[in-house]
Length: 270
Image 1 (cartoon, rainbow, N blue to C red):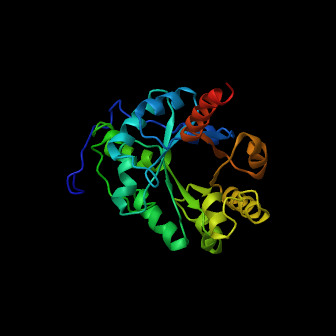
Image 2 (image 1 turned 90 degrees about the vertical axis):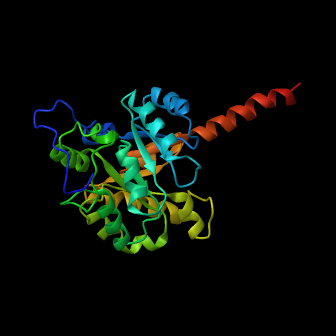
């Protein structure tokens, strides 16, 4: 659909974009709960969504998932009014907007390095006047043109969100300016890659990592942005106290690996 010929669903249409559960939770002052999937099966997405997190995190950066598989996982989550966050591959603007058009509720953009990078991500993912996102409206998110055009533009900017992943030391120089940028919805601290960059791989509770984790939360909340990160059940309270209000806890591959190891260990006890 070209910008010269936008669809013109009537103003009285009964169709509307699905509002974000994550944003609703955070606006109510609560912490959004997230579960991560590395598998690409819609049934696994449905199993996790039925546990009623606020969102499931799907990944296109480090997995072999196709757009079609991600689209089916998004559908499975929506059956339970659960959001989906898709971590995108760094590529062209199409790699960013396709998950949104499949009706993902949020994006996680990895390795945002500086203000210029954050501005580019904002421009790719937000409609004008906030950004320069290309518009279609004929896909899942706008209910295949049934959501009126102007409502689609406004609601997409209000009820869809983008997490800028801070996982490199270079990003710290521009952290305040990134957080100040209109259209940056969340700072997402990634301790794993950050620890590798600092030469302390895997030491995600190292004092240097702890200091950055604290700083990212403080800067995000100072500027009214979501503070997001990953953590296990044993550190949830600590991270919430720091100001984090979107936390991923656990992943399907961890659960499956632990279950398989536990079951097979029964043979070792014979």
